[in-house]
Image 1 (cartoon, helix red, strand yellow):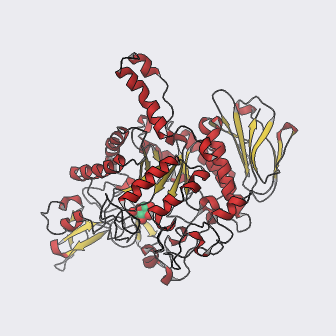
Image 2 (cartoon, rainbow, N blue to C red):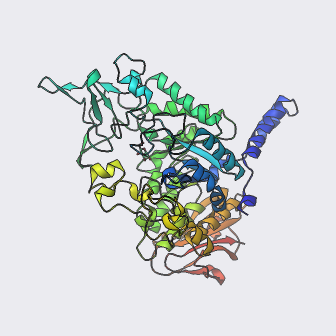
Length: 585
Ligand code: GLC
């Protein structure tokens, strides 16, 4: 059913985009007519992306670790959910110190996840389900087991030595030396690791097994662009660029200003001004964008762009030039912690006004953060709260990123004993930092042992208690489930022109508990959305007049709970954490 609702697939999009060009080439169209032909919006503009953490999605060979064939097996599910694309976190050969974010070969598949042939099959099968595949590109660092790094540590004169960031350190007064500055690793300790064989330190933003690449060396750019082409040629629809804001560091290696206080790893906190957000990265992104845009089919660059405000995202799009990332993630939106109508109103306003017309990419969850279920849940109304959040995410003017399990209301299950922790930052940081295992537990498919994730009795992380109820299969059968709410919202968003491209107009803007807005097409048709962000029932009067919607009849498109009524004049009573979406006619 979902299949029939999909807009034109890639082949069609590619064909449409190339048609005028072809017509000019054949002399069928004068140049001016072809240039004037309206360009359809690229597919990614309204897409729902779905993040897959492959270790925890679906195991197909019984070893307790998810794999690529497991993802292929679940394409029907993804299609019925309605997602347009999947982003798969790294599945390349890796010592797995950071569970794949430490890559030792960028152009192959780690045997525990499958083979390149499995990947090709996944892309081909996904295409049949009208789902595009994005891969994670870790450009900031490699594994210390990557052949480049092994070569780099052999000698100061080896071919790949300058692929990484080196320093001789400073004398420590006792005939030895110490790191060149106070930079710390995000994962704890100094960011400098000493290599006795060549008597030098290398820089690592993350674990010491993740040496940072030296992007000031043009050979690094050349090599990594080749890697990206390898995957683009294999048919990927784009990339999620890991840690993309930190590719360049201060070439003089100056110490960072101290911030006072301690990090979650117990280090003295220092500013990241020397190691993050350096202006040089933007020219690189323009070159990368131009390379990627040369491929047909609107390939897309998503960015892991941690910034503290939406306005700071604009440069990552290339500001008014729109020539850098297509969709840097709005992590400021993702960092909302309170379910507060005023806060969400502010964030939506910022996303709509501070990006110079670029399309926001909104998200709440990923594999590095406590799930929104737990961040926003009050322990009583979690499912209704999850529906409120999904409503905002999927009806705002944006592309959307969901993280596996978010759509079924999967909970975070942080380990309670340090001996159970698998994420190294949880091992070194315990108990202050318990690591990221909690948000990476296996996807809950059904109520069989191990939730249908694996036939092994030893999944790499334990399945979260409560999966017997919270799982894709049982929620699929429950009309009122969090899963079906997501499915209905995605279907609506796909088919309703106002929800796709319409502008967003905030309504009832002083209401502290109820968030209400209209989505309005240029032709003046529209949809109203109203969510109660409080635990008390709220009565409001909706009207689209101030948004330019003349109609006075309201037709409910979706409501949670199901029996929310709109009385004459637009009066609606939303129970605790109720959500309503309606057309104005
Ligand atoms: C990104 C990833 C995270 C990883 C880190 C280092 O933040 O999302 O999981 O540990 O980069 O690659």
